[in-house]
Length: 328
Image 1: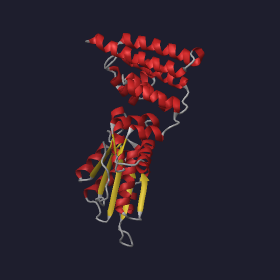
Image 2: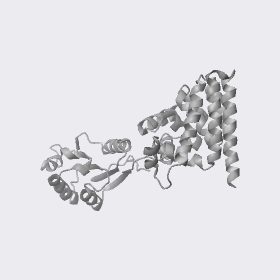
Image 3: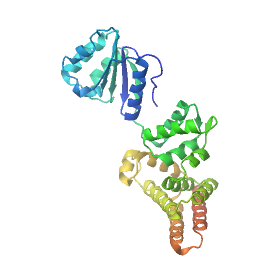
Image 4: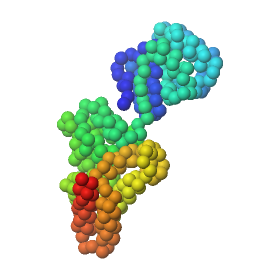
């Protein structure tokens, strides 16, 4: 997914390519830490003026060398870009040049020149898919000296959301606080107790996936920790509606296009596509009826909201299984 800067001192030219801002910022920070110079010039590519590069890369009066960071190098104007390409052919020995570049067609000559000059390249591509975020979470735990299985990664994504900065911070905190070499789903669930909305959607996801035992366990835990039953019934209804909308969308649409079509983030669309593999349209219809009845019951028609929700979950999983058998 990405290259880490590591602890080695960077060479004369280093290129950080991609559009994932969090990964770019962290990679640049690591490179600066590895460079170890106090004389750092950090500027945006669009602000680089003609003739300025020569001043930034000229020998220091104290002979300590310097680091020049040019961010969004694709935005460097024509004349300073020409100067930069010329510099890349013969970089100064006592200067560490770090450039970030979006990687697209804009400024491609500068990108090509840096690669031709033998620049070390760190890739920071945009993380958009659900599976990519799970990979990111597992990698973050490895950075902290821990392991996390798929269930733990999914639980953390449910609890925290898709923002990489928040996910990285959560992984770092959990790696420090959770004992043992492995961070499991139970540990993450305990740690994020009280995040009611995330808990409701965790119940819904396990139900949509047909994991009856896990769904019931999540439901009972949620109710025991004070999650309002109406939040859980709402999450179940939302999950089923999204299954229906994605399932009936035109074939061939990308996750991004589907996201715009149904009003959900692309990573959520990827997850729903995985869930859909076990569903039949008739099963979704039956499940929607079950959750509608449960919703009415938790709003006052039933003595036990917990029983109504558990019964709905069992009916939804049964509807999924019946649809899967009908396909055979």
